[in-house]
Length: 206
Image 1 (cartoon, one colour):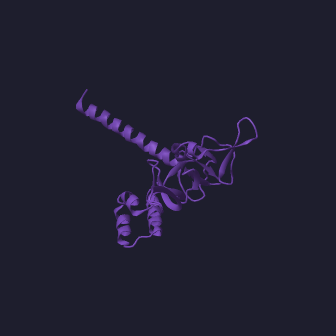
Image 2 (cartoon, helix red, strand yellow; image 1 turned 120 degrees about the vertical axis):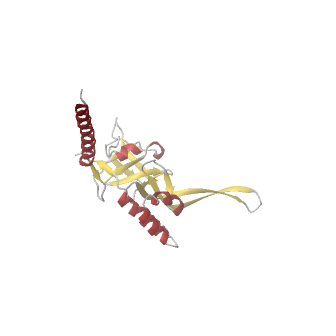
Image 3 (spheres, helix red, strand yellow; image 1 turned 60 degrees about the vertical axis):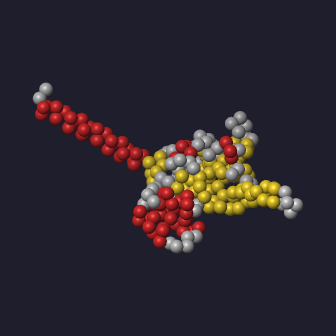
């Protein structure tokens, strides 16, 4: 085989390889739609983060809330069964997504690579009682949190935890750092701006 023939075959191979990758990327963007407010999430219960990312809850029958409890219909009867938050990732209902955390379900306020939500967090504090004995005190407070969709980790929405993500975007990070006395609203705005640069895309099941 001549050298020119070998080069021709090699070029054709590269063309086929890159065309295949281009078609795969095209298929991804055609079959997956970027999140927007009012996105048509499939209603149901997510057993895992991956089910949320794939817009494919395992349990797709009707779900409803009864007080703080999430209820689903039994497979064998019309009876409603309470769902243990510790055994599922979350659920979707009416276009909203709720994540399981600290024994309850909390709505995702801003959805992107970093999902913002608020939840009641129990904090344990070691202290001394009035008699001088060590004791443990538990307090509850509403806190702003965010979920890293890439890892599934949940963090407090503060400068220390948000900084590594913002550093990925130098212009956004500089603007954030220029703010001297940062408040919770500044963290929320920074997270929202980050999500605009790093949106999530979900499969559409039509």
